[in-house]
Length: 114
Image 1: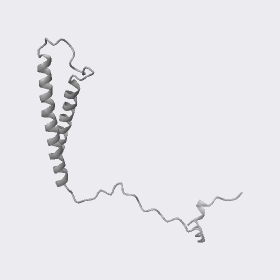
Image 2 (image 1 turned 90 degrees about the vertical axis):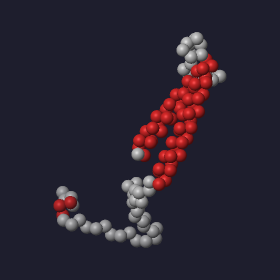
Image 3 (image 1 turned 180 degrees about the horizontal axis):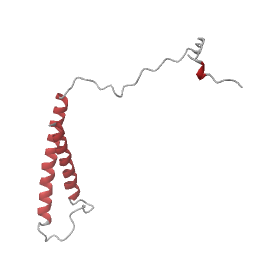
Image 4 (image 1 turned 120 degrees about the horizontal axis):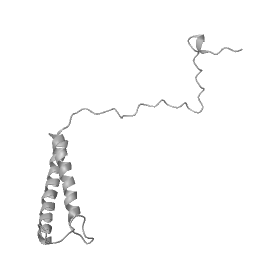
């Protein structure tokens, strides 16, 4: 259910961006070129885009709230530790003597002197 709502939310967001970019602004807008005597007049297109923006913005905010409620109520209780840092070995203290190196278990790893 959460994934479905998230996809619908993304579609609403994309539609909202598209409708906002289609509106005529001071710079002329991106999608409202052509003659005003087409299917919709300039005033009718502006009214339609204003209503579409209002409806999509309301849906976007509503879906954001619903998704936030779902996310808050969907607590699995398990903490993901896959990215947790591993404990780091402590560095030797400056005044402490160094531990002797361990000898190899067999002599096969020791190079022979020629």
